[in-house]
Every structure is written in C-alpha cells, then in structure tokens.
Length: 140
Image: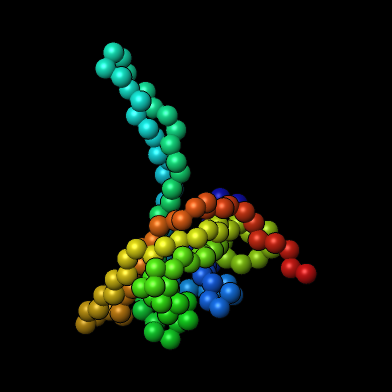
C-alpha cells in the first residue's frame, strides 16, 4: 500500500462515555520514547546503559470551535486535572484499520488569532500509561 493520506485520520476522545471525533483537527503528532538508565562506572571507557521506561507525548493543531463537544470536554478535563481517553485512527474509521488508544493528561492549551487566519488551537498532552496499538473491530 505504501503511503497513506493523512486526510482520513481521526482523533477521538470520550465525551459522556462515547468516542467523539475531535473537531477541526488540522494535524496531530505523537511521539514515543524509550528511556535509558546510565550505569557507567569510572573504570570503563565506554558508557553502559539499562533499558528504562517507555513514555509518549503528543499535540493537536486545530481550528478553535467553541461548539465542538470534544474541544469543550478537553478544556473541562484539563482545568479539572482529569485523565482523558484518546483514540487515534491514522487511516480513518473502518474494520481492520489501525488505531492507537491510551489515556492522556492535557498539559497545554494555546489559542492564537490574527487578522488573516481562523482562530487556532494548539493542545499538548502526555500519555498516562500504555499507548496500545491495535486494529478496529468488526461491526456486528
């Protein structure tokens, strides 16, 4: 298949226990990183490391939409310090298509406005636990 068009990607969060598409997303980013622990000693020339913990972070770039239920829920959860369930579907919704699921804590919210552009919204988050990679289930 090769390259996949990003135009079909979806980001969803739980709103009233229902996966709800996050409205007006222009782009998303998530990164995973494996930590290491330096166990080097003075008597060796080369550094030595142990495998540490895995973590993940991400961001959303959106157009601000105060009528979007997912944007409103994200704001409410952020200021309350609540964990948020997130689902990322890089190739859209459909049986057998890939998806990533996990829990996040929002760590940043920035709105931007200028005379020649729509109001923008940048959201930063940190994963809280595992980022699970899987496929979407078969519809009944």
